Image (cartoon, rainbow, N blue to C red; front, top):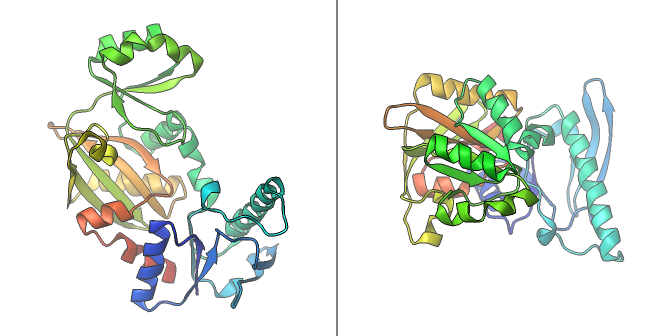
Length: 305
């Protein structure tokens, strides 16, 4: 039995459920839009893992019968109001219920995609960069600062620089141009992350267990995820990674305890490979649609065990 924890208004979760259906695998949805209303969870930790059961409106599953769990938590905008609770109490109730789920996931014996601890490094991109280097992936020259003078010196040294968030909050990657340099004094109010621009082609890698799916991304945009905002196109084609790069990607995912990871790489015209970050909860539907890589099928097979 497979347990999917998420909401069907989320396209990635919907794709996972559709793929499980297409494969003929047995699964249940724990609808986080409504959770915890209508669900019952009773378990206790043992030396051999969690023992107990979880029940939905019309189903009950013994935890020992789970072959895999897929988790994609929803933001506040995806949650429905809790009946008979004030908005403040509803937020507290959902937070407590989510914490209970995360505690359970840590103790389950089956594969969990992904346990919360694996994603914590994404909250600090500089810290994650250290872990990526330890796994054997090269990262671009990086500066995190709120000192305008330090940014100007970094820009003078590298010539072409991009900037983005240093935290897990999603941001649009932009080049540091004359307009941004002119308002660097605003940086004193909060630090940002600056990196030397790496020329070449973007490659998005998804690791699913021990399987690797890589897509070369062709786009004129600095941040191809938002190419449409600049009126630009994106094309993706499957690509084979050099063995050393593929091994480093798998090692990074294992080090971070991620059964599913989205890894952003770039290969220079000279054949050098750089890694920018690892996404612990990747929206892989975008890459599957553009490249045709069977990421969701691999995930379904992993969850089935």
